[in-house]
Image 1 (cartoon, rainbow, N blue to C red):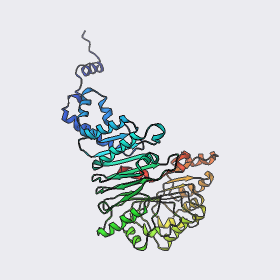
Image 2 (spheres, rainbow, N blue to C red):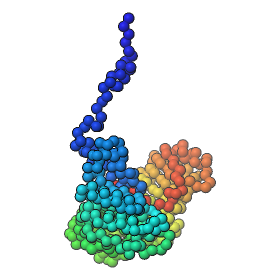
Image 3 (cartoon, rainbow, N blue to C red):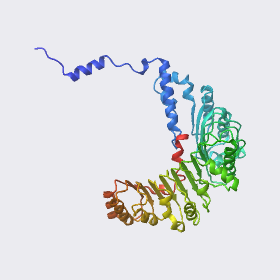
Image 4 (cartoon, one colour):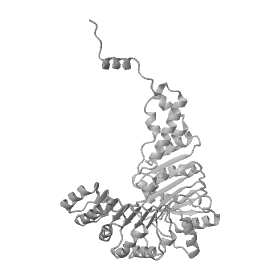
Length: 450
């Protein structure tokens, strides 16, 4: 009697006998194209991470000799330079990337968050940085995370003659153990610049008119540059600015009446705004009134600063119809006596985050059904769990329930109230306390531009 193999065994034997063709059977030109697309995707991911992953070149080169050979001769794969160490070998590595990238635009990420002089001679760091500066005509994106101590040997002056291709510039300098003079960046012409984010570094810039109409993201603590940008935009005669994200958390520039009018026009297209360390916010609502504004963050305000801000909103009858996210952190209790008008000024609010802010005035507002009916996400610290329950119940009864409740964990947790909240709110998250004092909430909003 003739027997037959089970179907699964037959299928397995056929697959084993005639394997499907792999990537090695593809023409080299097609493999190069795949590698180039992979590199482009990895650059987009790496430039948004706080600690980017290893360049795709290193990964591909370890697969096989053919891929390593292709990678060595494909300039696209040498355009993303990740620097995480200061040594003579790193200097040689940077030279090799600059040479093999064959003149293509560069994406450079320098991430050295330690003081070089404590571990080794700073000569190598200077050599690396000079190599980076020498290629400024090829920068497409430059991101630097280090500490200001590492620039002492450079006399605190960083010269960049010209960067015609540069679209994104991000420099974040942490403070070291010793007080050092704040470095200053002397920036040459950058006609393609779209994103400018500088922290703990000064800026000297000549002509801003070459990029004022292209800039979309601005976070800087140099008031003179902000004023220059606004004046240059008005002088250019352009009607529609591209500025979308503005962060003045570190310093709100003092503006004269004429400058204020220019600033108001330049900020008319904002969708995201962050203000902080300001004693008087009275003038800011009128200066920064944008009907397109979607996200507003106010941080570390002075005595009654929020009160004067809200008073100005009410006096001028200013309304922000598109605003859906409001974040407040480190606001004195004395500023919270006028917050009721925020419900009128921000009628479409969907997300409210309160960090180191007395929550009671806002919880009382949220208990009233006609106030912020679209609100679905609430973040609080500190908060009384028991105080939240009546507000959540009232909003459920009014047909506008919360979808997400984020609570930074307290030392003593009211387990009964927490259990009740979890039954009546779709998502209840207990966040770690480290999120209470964010450096800047708006960094995540800018990641798409790095």
